[in-house]
Length: 371
Length: 142
Image (cartoon, rainbow over all chains, first blue to last red; front, side, top):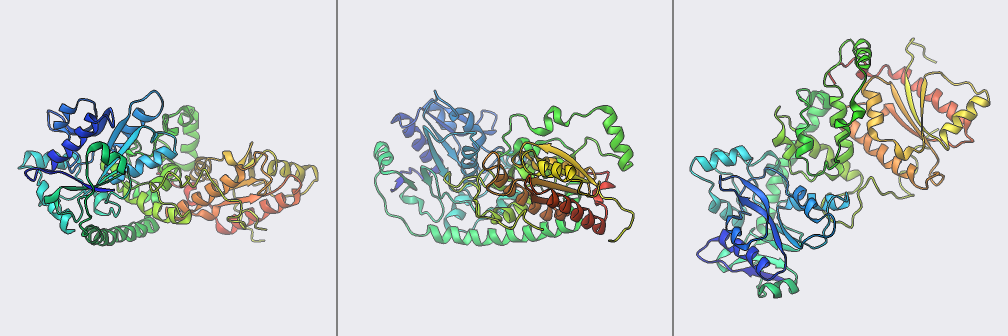
């Protein structure tokens, strides 16, 4: 049902903190996983059990340094566990759904709270903003209401956010909706009747402007996205993946930052990739020269093969790259094509199986039968 | 047959139950086929990680052949169906990445199809001869 989280003195952050405190006080959950502001001013997810500490919760901080879906897994993966709520952005929720299908996390005993996202800044940008006069949150909230979103002067949203068309909360146990909302009556929230009852929330009418605001932003984001796709396709065609990734320094940051790349021991950090000294000599002689560390392109192409179908486009790989490579753009561009081949939308539903672990007998029948 | 003196190297990942046995049959039947293929036997095409194919291609194989049981005949019920999807994904990714996806062939060849195995290797060798060497062979900076 649709309800409203009561707001006092136009303080949205206090209203959301109050809502999360209610979740704890009514014993709906035993802890809340939510972005918290540390005493030194950084924003990081934390599992909060003490309602008083939720005064430092900051689910509206427009910054994304890591995908919180990764943090949910260890807390929910097996019993015994606690009942928790996880406050997530839409891209984090989609990553969570993929991780459920990859058996890296569980939705059991978990209440997902998905919050509409205007876009986020990188960690360095966010810190700079804080140091230089602060982050203008009211401008962001106003933009979410009208659908006229702009980043703060002098700063740009993260590269991935600029082309993100899935920024609205459309799934999750609790959906907190800022787009198109007139917040004077409270913050619109969609949740199950039973949960609303336990939290003491009453049904409220929809105010009807959400679709309009979401549409407006979606259109401009898709336009930006398609321009990026076209540019990236052109580059890949001209330079190849080896050209685009030529400056890679093999730090593996993209893999570490990726919420989908879950392997405990990555193939590329395993002994499989350790060769006998004489082997390197053989390669060097055969090609005349041999790039070291070896297998740089193999690393990127393998990552594409292993996870591009599940790429939910959070773009943390791009932010993590010390060589400023457009990792996320490559993955989204290739991902869009490949996801279309398998008619798969990552993060949409736990009911849709991962394309590479399922099959139909009656598909691609001509494949392999060529004579 | 065009003969430009170039002898392609083909790395073949063959499943134990069908294509490898088919290759064996080609041999015991004394069927001639080009010696350009280097066979790696696996238990199932379902165990072919795309990384294997990529590693071969990036290190200079001119082609990679993945051979398994016909759909419905997998010794493990569904390995070849999964391989089919993986190879489709791999070829699409290679295409998107600006690499030559036609150097990767997937073929279903049963244990009784010795002739088909020999024909496939002949065809692939000929195709790659005409196509020319894998550009990655000389690319040191990958």
